[in-house]
Image (tube, rainbow, N blue to C red; front, side, top):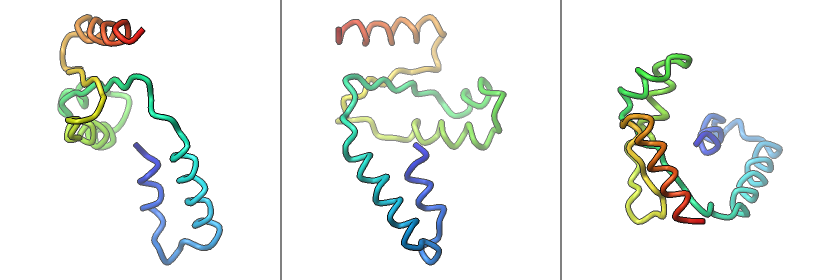
Length: 102
């Protein structure tokens, strides 16, 4: 989630040859990564995420949570789980997805 944001943090006029080369190298590594056998997305309403995650700043938690919340998972192979449920229910659903792939 963070890698694409790093490139945006460096203004184009400050991207010297070394920075550009490193960005290209990083992009080449990402292209070589195979897709996961199973992708489980624990999706939770940003307000609930902020209430639960008290060890990080509200802004940081809300931003990350909103990114997953607003993502359109339709047409992907992701198993999207409502993590706003009780922990036991979330764990059971995750376990079910894992066992179905074994």
